[in-house]
Image (cartoon, rainbow, N blue to C red; front, side, top):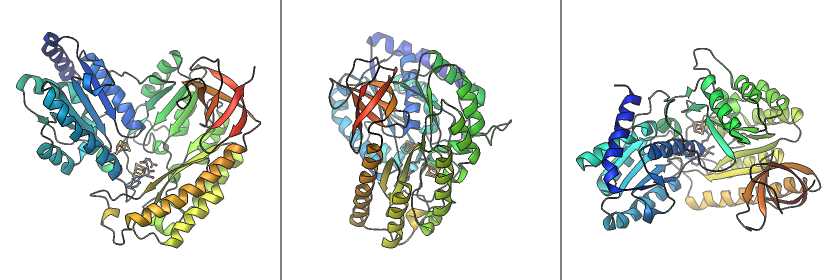
Length: 460
Ligand code: SAH
Ligand code: SF4
Ligand code: F3S
């Protein structure tokens, strides 16, 4: 039986089993990256197909799905905290069904932990198996037993799953799954499996749908979008795919993440510079400014090669907004090597930086290296890096004061409901007074700047 027939049968059976209980509510909590968010859209689609209404309230929920992340210890501890807290709810509501899925559940030791220590969890499945949710739930409802499945991340890409997107201005489109890079610190290749590209026609079909529905921002997703297409029967580079995406009619920005520097090409930069729809923004994680650390991380570029990429891109797009990821306290990172990272960020002057203290991940090569740094030292470096970047971010933002920016209106500002918030093409948060309709573009003159946001007024 094919996966999709099995799924349809299971969906029908679950609907029958749940019908006598009246309208039921489901809740998804997502802990991971944008890829995980996109997977949660599919899970939400399946839940709605099975007859659930979505809720944000744990107390109201009859089915709770936790979509987990394993990238750092902190992410896993948050998940375990929530799983633990759900025990009391389950004691009060014995019919509550709890599922834990996603990247963390691709790891055997975590699955074992849930199985033995968190016996109130009914369903466990890994990131490669989310399409199996209806079958797993059917078993739990019919046989009143737990359903803990083994990890499997080799599955083909399944294209016919329903999707229920989060509300908002952005439409995420996954272009590829998995990662083949094996950066020595990273768990993602182990939990997400090998790189698999979606056919260009599938990607374009989804972009056309979103554009026709009025989506103003299309986000193309993959762990390393720059290696898109090499595994397809008819190879297609990411730059070629981008050009086709930009040909889709509609008024929208195209963004994408993540780009690995080793595969970022001049062809990509030229495409970005030439296609008006591609937002002038690039997230290009550098991870470290030290060649020795980069080598130990298995990143396959040097600091000089990274800087050459930035120079090449800036020659083509002087106003590009650049962001990056940095890990401090990789095993054996000396004070001098950390200073090389500080020097690199001063040289590049990123608009925005995502900074992380190295977190050992079981089964990765770096976790077995000697010279692990103390938590205190990692924290000290993290703070120093963040302080250095805050100054740069503020200065980069201040340089925009007086300019007029095209801004996509996202809605009421989170910090002050009487003002609006939106993003510039470069991805910067802007606060401004309305009126303006959500999901439209307005021109905003920037009046002042802070580290994390700009403030401005709409000009006619
Ligand atoms: N595929 C993307 C994103 C991977 S996860 C990329 O290659 O950039 C996002 C970020 O988390 C990484 O860029 C890295 O900076 C950070 N990260 C990954 N594993 C980590 C670990 N073990 N400890 C600390 N940070 C980590
Ligand atoms: Fe992890 Fe490296 Fe793959 Fe990114 S490219 S997901 S950091 S292994
Ligand atoms: Fe994303 Fe975390 Fe998985 S970063 S791919 S949800 S391990």
